Each structure stands twice: as structure tokens, then as C-alpha cells.
Length: 417
Image (tube, rainbow, N blue to C red; front, side, top):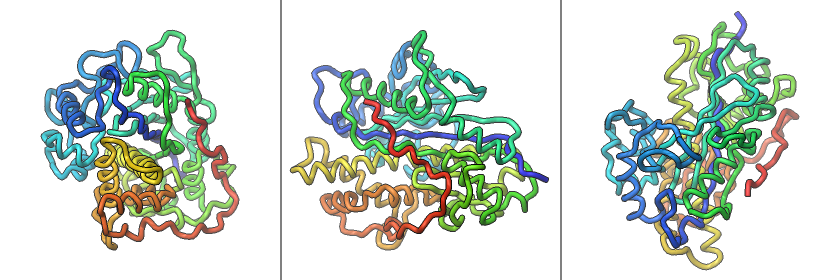
């Protein structure tokens, strides 16, 4: 029985650290400040009162009733809509909706834009959702696509590639607004978010890596043996194509699956969490073959999206903090932000050869390793008085020769300023 994919989720996550958020403003910006503990705690308390899921009636990210920010978990009628293992493990409370603002600050929990952006897809027939997170010193935007149908591996790879290469998007809050390709759409949303947080139109980009891309096969069918990841086989080539957003024909000789494997819960029954420098593909046939459309896989994709955004935000603080220290000293409010990032990055990665894993997947640890910021992280940890060495998982292994394949040659994203 051939492998057929019925539902695929694709998320592109952009995160940008903006040190200018630390500067005092002449008037309160539309979105409250989060960079100092007192500011954050007040905003967190107000965010508890905001509704979730309301649609922006004017220009996004503002333009709706109530506070502009809400808590990042789903609340309905004042109660948790569902228990998310991500927030449960991050905050250590099963009823994390009752977490104190002080503890949320220590964990650097972002607040979410309360109003949903309405997105129009110009030449596609799939659903698109936008989520925006405001970290104390950074912004994240996730653009997620839900692809339904019946796709062979070749068709699935081509469809995911088209999400970046051909589809156009726009927010429908502006009559006749411009269309964007995905690589410009995400940065445009970040620009809007930055303006609303600082109350000025001039933007000052900080640490802003390429978008991180997550692809999860949520529903599929086929023979279990055909779905196994075999070196050089069709599924292996499919995962490489999805990770690089290329077509199956562009994958000639992908590297060994062992070099791409990241520890995680997908590793059963021939599945794996397949990793590239800024991409992950979740392939868990033991889940989607047994249950059809798998809710667990949808939750796993969601949790990876959150962990990716938080980790990139902390990495950005590390990059900024290390540079500020080299130039002299941190501005007012910077010390605690740097210490929080230093401790949280260590918590995810592990110290002294032990790993206090917040998330069972080691995707975030690999994300830290691949960031190239080992020196900067070490510098802010030393400045913050943290003596433990990070786990060896952060030490980047020697780059192995990689056979020719569809490696993304587009380079870093074009600055959107």
C-alpha cells in the first residue's frame, strides 16, 4: 500500500529581539511595556482579563475590544480550555492559569496579541493562521498552514515548497492591501508588531535569524514498513525535501538519517524528528497510522512552535547582552533580562552533563547548539554569576561533508526595515 499524506501542518516562526524596547517613551505605547518586572507583572494581570480568539476589527495587531494582550494559553469563560503539557512543564503547575506574575516573569512567559489577524490566501485553498507573541525584549510571529488532501510523497513535497515559493498572503484589515510572498509576509507582521509596542514608526532591528520552519504530518495512510525511514528511501527523501522546502526531484543524495535525527517522542515504529539547522520535520507513523488524524501530533506541533519561539527570544537576548557588555555595560533593566536568558538557556540545554529538560524533545537544545552563539551564552552566564558549564549537547559537532541536495541557498532573510 503506497504512502499517502492526508494532513500536513507547516509553521514558519519569525523572532526578532528589539533592545529599543528598553528605552523610555514620551507617551505610553499602544501595547504595554514588558521589559521591567513591574511593567510585566501589571501587563500580565491585565492579560488575564482579555478574551482569546476575538478578531481584529481594525488594523492588526490592535483594533479590538479589551486589552491588547492576553495570556498565551487558551482560556474560555475564565477557565483553561485544555491542559497543555508545554506550559505545564515550563511553569511546573498543572493549573498554570493561576501562576503568579512573578513566576511568569522568571520564566519569561510571552503574552499573546489578543486579536486574531484575518489572513487571505491569494492563490491557495488552505487555511492560514497567525499568532503573535510579545516577549519582554522580543517579538515572535508564527504563520501556520493546514494542508488537507490526498498527496503522494512527491505531491506533498511540491505543495509544501509552494507555500514559500508561490503562494501570496495579506491581512484583510486594509482594503486593497498589498500581497506578500511568505518570506516577506512574516517580516511585515513583525514590523507592525514592533510599531505597536514602541509607539513609533521607525524600526531598529536586533537579532533576527531566518524563520524557523516546522512541518508535521498529522494524518497519513500506508503500510507500516513503507512508512519507515530507510537511508536513501522514499520517506527519507521526503523528509529531506520537507526540511528544505524543495521538491522530491531536487533531493538527489540526502545525508544519513542518523545525522539528522533529534531525540524526541517521534522515535518509534520507524519514525523520527528530522532536523536541519532551522527546520524540523515530525514523522511519527506509529501515531498517524493507528489513529487517523492524530490530535497528539497536532499538540506536538504546537508545543514545538512555542519552544522554538521562546528559545529564539532567549538567544536574541544572549546575542544582544554579550555585545552590550563588550561595548561597556547594559542599560537600565538589561541585567535581569540577561540573567533570565542565561538561566533559561542553561535549563533547556542542561548543565554539568545533566539535562533538566523542560520539553521532552531535544529540539530546543539543538536549536541553541546550531545558533553559533556558544561564546555569547558563555559570556552572559559568567556575567550573571552562573558557574556551571552547559551540557555537551551545546557543543557543535564537526560539520560532516554533506552530499549535494536541495540545501536552501536563499541565505538570511531580507531585512524588512
